[in-house]
Image (cartoon, rainbow, N blue to C red; front, side):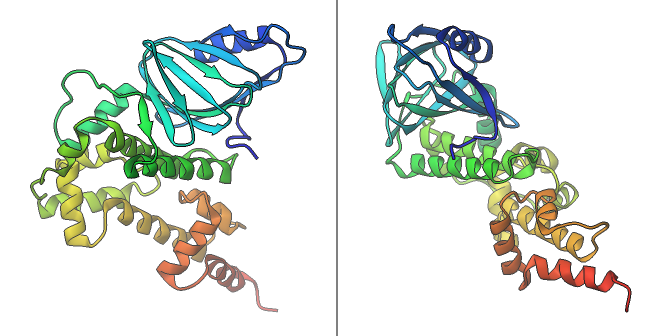
Length: 326
């Protein structure tokens, strides 16, 4: 099954239809297709994330599509075949080991079997994340080299986070996004910035001052009160008044885990309470999803590691206790 299969955007059978949907949905222009086409089968899948979005595009024929300049950064990853993007007279091949990031106007050249996954993220979200992580406002434009070498460790990490995000989307196709997808998207933003933004690693590597004990306690209180919502770095910064780097460093020193790990444990504890006191006939899957776990296998493994038994055992015990004695 293709990624995002359960989230179709379009499937067209003519070049005129393709030109129309590209303009309507992507503000893009179809500028070249083969003249001797007898049949067309072009499609795209789309998933809207809390901040940005994912597109899987498969046009099934040699195609050139022109994209205008945008406030979004378009990050292109190859899934199959061969393709390239031309920006300012520079052509970047999209390969298994090279992605492309750009917001300028450009042309995407699709080979006959080229299939790409494009992540679109607003430039404003990147600026906000940098400010939250470094404790400093972003001055000037964000500039990105369009070539991303996926063989480099930090870029490879970004690709792995993307794969985790897609797996979480496909695991429960009909479920609303929930906190897990929002947090994975935020992790993808951070991974992109640390892998790609010039000078970002230097800013993050500078030693940060420690947060105060009351700020760590306030972070815990915020997480416990909002465990069923996405945990964003910006929200923790606003709730505690500490910079993200200071808070995360001191939180780990004093609590032995990161705020994200603490949130995960808090959600597992919420799931355990629901399993122990089910309000209606329910399943482990329903409770896992309601607590932000879209992958049942991962939830089961994490639950067993935390509490020493399977979630199904906890639920079955609670249901057995409710049954009237015969």
